[in-house]
Image 1 (tube, rainbow, N blue to C red):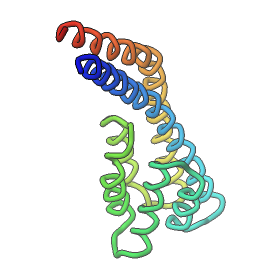
Image 2 (image 1 turned 30 degrees about the vertical axis):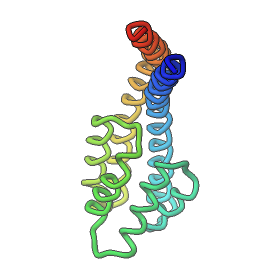
Image 3 (image 1 turned 30 degrees about the horizontal axis):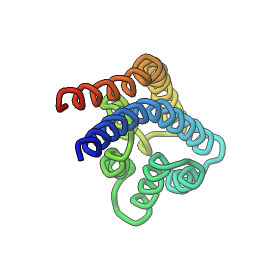
Image 4 (image 1 turned 60 degrees about the vertical axis):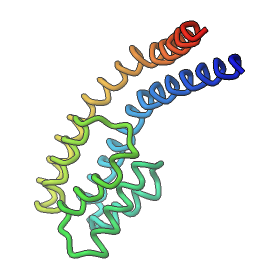
Length: 170
């Protein structure tokens, strides 16, 4: 019975470390997907003259979750409610946020982007998207550094922590 308990503790600690490491590796990927989506959005708004809700819907079909969910919900709120683009973006972000691996700094950048989306002419929209892309690029670099620095350490520490707990119990 003790061995079963020890195995369960080890399994749980390794699983916890793997989950934390996965979050660290998912963050740069999700930032990259958002950057790619914003670049596509810029092209569709500026050059394709596509309405915002239609661009967001198209993006949601091409992206993996949870980023696709953000744009799908944004498109749905734009078409099915009386909300302006800024409020629809805020609500979409708030609903999808718990399922992302992003940090508060990315949330602030995306909320700032949401304040300006759909309110200006094409040239100003393009400038705002480019500013957002620059901010997200810096965040992606930081996320990659953190992932390299702490990803393996999280898995190792969780295994060592589990072993320590098992040893202390025996």
